[in-house]
Length: 247
Ligand code: F6R
Image (tube, rainbow, N blue to C red; front, side, top):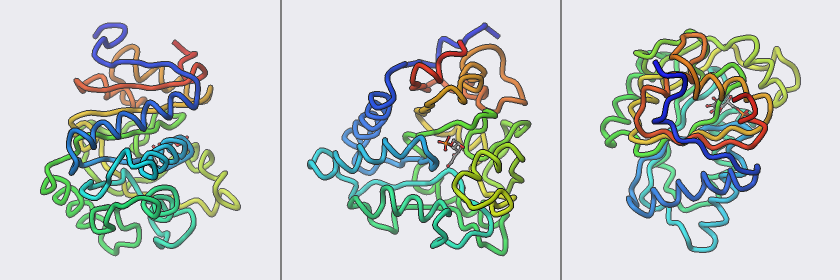
């Protein structure tokens, strides 16, 4: 395995330009294929990207009427109207502000009594819709993609996972206390992620520097789920200078 993967393209820009670049990539995908299937993340990182997409929509530069979306993950046990559910996040930051029909937006049901069949139905639906054309990813400090925590396997599909303490700690900033952060989530698997035709990953801030280094350099390692992106032929990583500072 080479020290770095020449297949993964890297762009380093200031924080706002990085978010704008990712929004432009999404807009370009929708322009080329108006009914594109997009994979989408939640968290702090995508917020400025979604803001930019809303601005583009308001300016008449992008039309979401035929777009279909599949979110990467959802917490287990939170109702869709819980303010920290990913369903509520997507409604607040994107879906309520653009013209995408709700029936074309897909999120895993964190309240399902049967996680296994929920995850299988999600995978089946994704395949039926033709698979993801473009998957937009964030990245965890521990290198997680979606909620595929360290030691997730590349062959795994959508499933229920237990969150690591460090992920619950990182995400406790959105909750009143760490014990309010769900212990489990449903997530697309690494296999599902790698099935997307193209991938754009956005990383902002010093806390992501080690994960970005492991994503771009060295071998694929089980401890660093992000390193599996080396096995995909169309990945663009967009970082600010801090996130790129580990290389
Ligand atoms: C959330 C997701 C996660 C986040 C990651 C980074 O849907 O897929 O992998 O992308 O935890 O989160 P932020 O952007 O809050 O640092």
